[in-house]
Length: 324
Length: 308
Image (cartoon, rainbow over all chains, first blue to last red; front, side, top):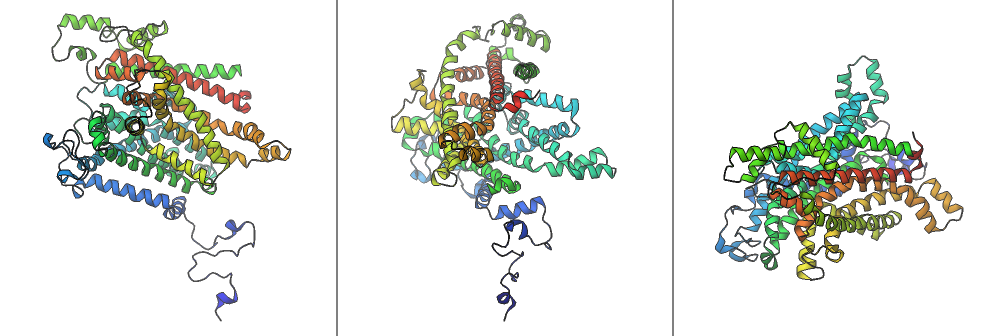
């Protein structure tokens, strides 16, 4: 007779971990951990949870898809998005070989939507990287050093926080009479987008710097800079990464809003600009709502996937939130 | 309490000075020459340029310019636009319109958001909760201008339920723009309230209140709601900034003649003095609103009131 029939509680060959029998103790979740298993890091544990979370898997696949579209738009359409034929304007979906029809300017809507992904993704990523770098550095210094430096940096943060993202960007945009490009838009959005990251980094660093292992490191004679870089920041960065992911979606929206208002990147194929021209052609819209729906859906799906991914990562990193 | 208010007001002063200086410097100093914007393609004569620079104080150092500007602002002088008209004139008719629209937005966001959040939080895991969550996620992901635009197209153009054009500026005209403006924050308020209510609902003091025989309604309003409103109130204060950015977009979509469209017109004409004045006023409103929120916070949470 096999041993698992003799003793139903013994781990089977396909069981990675020992699982305590049901009802043995109310502390099941604590007890059921295999004491001999190699411990997983916070990120390892989070990864394990994330891969089994359908929201995370779906949003990650969506993001990968958008990245692929942004990198290789030619795979999805052979039509030049900047080639407008006036005689072919306002075509209904399917007419003249245009899958989603054409806009008032005679552009192929499908090609515009596919090619629009690149600007959104690039602005989103550059702004996210730059604002996280600025906010992360200032927040870490404020939280770690504390004292008057913290006070000064926090007030500076308040000043930038008092100017709403889109408003600030508009005031700046006014100074670029020939329109902005990829770099200036990312820079301008970063100038007003770093405050949330800095606040979170500061709070996180303060909670980590008072923990025992940091004190142990100090006792062992590590320098302040080394402690900050090797011990404090790696342990404080998780919530910052979550916020940065969600912010990426926010920045994509902000860029689209600027393009919609006509102060974003000029002469580029972007969803915001397409929505702006859709607004000015209500007649086209009546015949072919794809002028409005195609860029809207593309924009919404992209932003949604970044927000869902951020939410999933936050839940995975915060077991308290997970149980709720 | 009085010390708490005094401290908050004192903390606001450097932020106010810094933010106005930043806006001022941004509008006049980053990038090109503001005077060049009036000239257009034809260059102005040096004498005219010099006179204009003097009129707008551009010949003085930045800090002096800004101090003169602030001084005028405090005395109620909003300055003169590059078109030569007093800025106050064009804002006078625009402010009430935006105010009405913002009021609708805030009502949608707070009243409906908190109500939906409480239902969702108390009925966690039910179909109604899931429905609210799905709607809120969708609303958060879809940018305001897309929502506004689609709503205008479907409700206004196709179904003809609401006016497409809200240039009238009355409450009736502004219902759709106001709802669109408030809907994103509605989703955030719903989610915050839901999490917060679900957490407080299982707290010991709520069980005690139920055990001592208080009605369900009493428990919800007196014990659950009050304690779960704190994060929501904080959010609403910070969110007013997003509301202002959203107002420009919403006003442009629905053709509302409010502050946002004044700002929009100023931007298209590169009218720096007008841009600075409008943005500065919005920043001041934002700061004051946040101060009020901080005071509300103290009303809701006695621990803050009594801390020194």
